[in-house]
Amino acid sequence: MQRIHSGGEFEAKAGYCRAVVAGGWVHVAGTVGQGADAVAQCRSALGIIESALREAGAGFADVVRVTYMLPDRTEFAPCWPVLLEAFGENPPAATMIECGLIDPKYRIEIEVTAFLPD
Image (cartoon, rainbow, N blue to C red; front, side, top):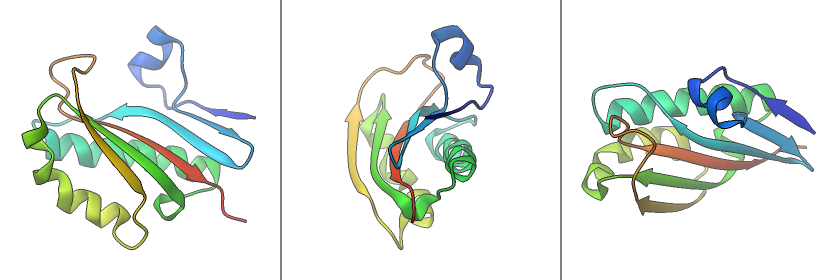
């Protein structure tokens, strides 16, 4: 098993790592990004996720499941072009949940599961 740390502030505070590679799977923890709105934060979070996937030996094409969590579901549609850019050629199964996040400044959190390529 491989544990991947990104150095994010909540990893040390809450006792988790950015991703875990186990049994051919890459489980990337819920990830928030920086920026003034959901779209900027979405782009930032995907960058962090992409780094974790790359370190695990995978990429967005290997993602089989994604969960989007937003405090306001109306902010999801503006993120679609960013998501299409990341996943468009290889869309994963997806779920969007409207819920509270760890801090009100965060507008989107993204969690993915990927299968390592052969």
